[in-house]
Length: 205
Length: 215
Image (cartoon, rainbow over all chains, first blue to last red; front, side, top):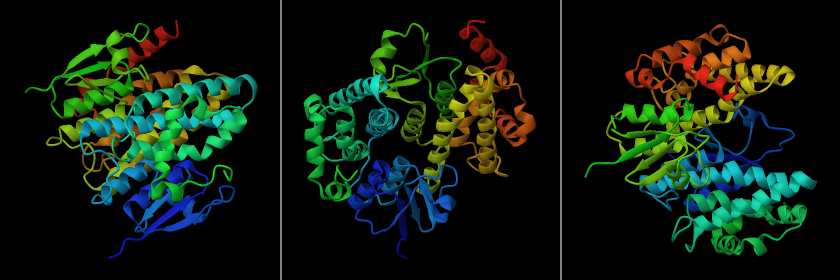
């Protein structure tokens, strides 16, 4: 029986992009449904009544919500191709830790940079660069956060790249100047078809 | 080679308690190290340099941080006894969703009850009950969130029970009156030795909070 996979999403969402990259990595065919967040569809409200947010993956009629939970689900169900999480429990715990760091710190602070002004924005910028320095430290000399291959943490973070232009413009800063390793890593990820095809143009965002 | 397991923790932390219950469920021997959060040990700062928070599990010298990540790690390493997460990927995704809901919603709204006043506190009270009603809905008629047996979501949430007296006193309401199913579920969990031995007395936690507030 063929799998029926539907993704409720919003094209600029860095969370939705994570799921799209995961689906592409696994070669899964799915139906993409664009949501208007000012006019959420009855399907979205039915499938994610708790948070009413995208992305939502609907697999054979059953919903999975929250981007990192969806990605782990995809990795576990379609486990025979392109594993995203490491196989060893310790490395898996580390991968989950860093993806959680991206969720707790990077997204929230990035958002502050392009939604606030003045002192608040300056404080957000400072924290933004502290976070990315920490991430550069974690990346080290590895080609990817996952090591030799693109993995869970790379997927969790690379989608933030589509918002770099917005951050640089609002914050009047250059991410490449401060964190060249991160930009180099992003460009390496963009050489992967699944990433290049998913990330929208920064200026569109 | 015997496993060396150390837990850096704070007795009143509902996050630390999750790890202690998981370790007890699996029958794992470990060394418990109490942290003074006003004077964090060099070991904690070395093992969790990013967040500098407890709990931290140190397994054969290697640290794992963030309570739910630690619990999943414990479940995966000591997988032959008392499984905490379901085995089916879909149920596992649902369990992760609800534990994430507890983390995102329950902690923050509870904290607002003892750190805010006036209108902000009233709004927090309303949100608190909305959140707990949602959890009651998810529990339904099942004995545990995990179904017939205590599992990951039960573990993620039950540790908040030790803070109920704090919440009720500062919030000036009765949780049992509004959410009887939750109280019934908590009492069912407390019949498990691992939970009963881990959760501290509610009044002790209240005294701890009062001390922290300088009362």
